[in-house]
Length: 537
Image (cartoon, rainbow, N blue to C red; front, side, top):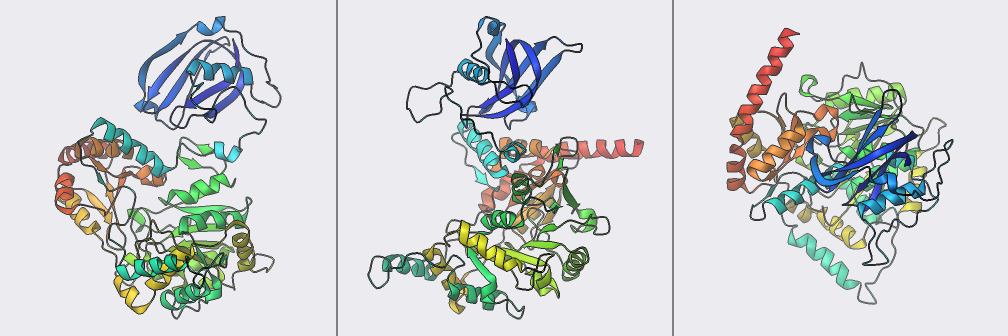
């Protein structure tokens, strides 16, 4: 059989997720390896001076792969390949081979005509930028591991300290405002249809006056949205594919993933864990979680989150002053994510616009999710100052207004009614954030771990020197039934760390954290070996 490239089929998503094109190879057989809900196809080939073995995975690490009983050895020699559509010059797919592999996989279903079938493929090529993404988005992958663990231990009581959700009920005054608005929609007098794409002006003014007092921000500069994460992608659309990007390392994965989708990232380099065209600004404990701007290359866009997700560090006034001056000197734009500002308890700035000159170089995104418990209600905003201009002098706010009006019909008017209630004097007093991260910090510190964050953010950033963060994640889940987040999911600077959020059932949760003593012993042994190796080097 002659085959062009390798195909991986993901049984969970029921779609072909990876094709590695190359020269023509003759396969002696195909072995299928199973890993969770994903599969690894291993092809052993004949011919060539050095031979060939290709491996591709659908988001499942090969170290987790377990041999399946499914094995096809030399069967494919006897199978006639369908009519080839391979163009060796352009590399277009051999549909006959794809169909053959899919049939060998047994994916054809007769249950419903709506289910995916391998009998037809369109002529539309896949977006090459989507092919550049690394596996799944981080948090759905965490959920996949959580689901598998629940199947394995159906009676275990999971404590979910992974995704940073809120746990406190929304104050009744705020939910009442939303309920009354919803009920009014059933009356002639209270019914309202589409609203302004930029948001209810009363809410925009309330955000400016309550949260940006004395910073010179006007209601017209605020764009209400369905959440900060959605605004990240709208800003990426605004900026186009030709700009260069810098991110904190570690940082929220949406900054990098959306940059990849919009074609700014370049090739992924396996050895460094970085995309070639993205500038990674190292923000570790050795630099007080702030980048060394003297070694940071000039980029068009700087993504910066404070308090930082995942480290929990809130940048100081002096640090942000350096950042604004750096952006101004380089002609860059800062996209500042202040979604966790409500957790700040010290003098750290809650907005980039507290810094003089920031209006000329910064855009700020923020959210009601954390301080008002609106993670499910969905409401956020973006601030685009009128002074912010492109290199040709054209105001950025005019283009963002165009993006919003083209791609968005406005946030739910029910959600906006809740947001407006949050910002009344009585409502604002009721919207409080409870931070349990200090309790988590103390529990891990009692075991001898170095723990960062937890003061101005709902996250503890725990260091396991010499250990893979995915291994630590898996071991804590296996031994304690606690879901965390592996630090490497936030960038290469997060390796050896895990992020633990503050959604905790206090008594049971702390006792389970304390049961991590075995991991602590392993951490100490690996840490000592790492130190010994460094001294020898």
